[in-house]
Image (cartoon, rainbow, N blue to C red):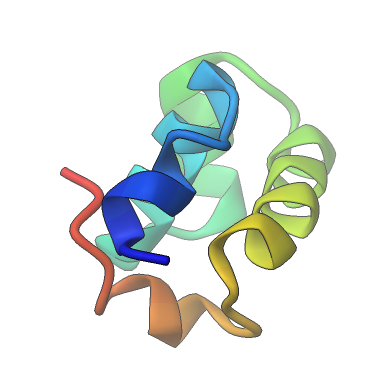
Length: 66
């Protein structure tokens, strides 16, 4: 499935967290920017990885998430 199709499976919050994580931001940095807890950011990434077919943050950088 193309990356665009996989991105459409994410919630708006998951998509935003993934976009920021793909830039190299830490969970704490993402949490501060989106007014979330770092634990919530981790949860969004945990749910987004299987939807995107990735298993690490470094793989997020290869997806067109901007």
